[in-house]
Length: 241
Ligand SMILES: [Zn+2]
Image (cartoon, rainbow, N blue to C red):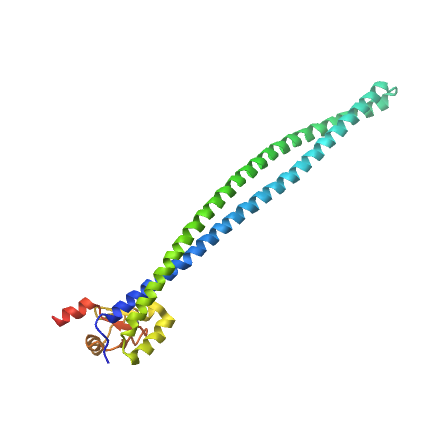
């Protein structure tokens, strides 16, 4: 049994093309998925920023309320101080007023800090919103590109599969079953072109007997890696001359 010169080389080329097309087809949905993850991440960022803003706003309002209440108390104490008759009470009120004023001065600083933080958080919400829009636009572009690419790739895949079926139909029937069994499992990895006198799949040196069989176009599998071996057409042509 012999295989037509160049037939296995052609089949190997077709298998490599199929691998490449299938990889390209798988890449598209992954790119879309990456875009969707990015949009989701931006949405989470915004919701986190808004949540932080709300909490900081509430804390800031509480502090401002506390500040006002203490100011009222200071006024109250001040009035009592003015009306006070005993020296001991006067001292106590004075100390109380001083303590409240110190506490309010600390609180004022905290409120100011809180307001600055609110500005920062608002800026973060704004930039996150811009980022989300960019991510959404980008996702749409990727979706459009992928969907037009997929159509082209699908029809190219159908064409190459037909080419494969045509090339396989020319193989001897006995050999075809074995060939299909290994190519179904290993795809392009099932075949290897001989490089010099070495298997292109595992770089094992082939015996002179094996080389001879290959020149005689007999179907031959590498004893080491199991690849279906073949000689390149130009190598066969050179030998024939
Ligand atoms: Zn090998």
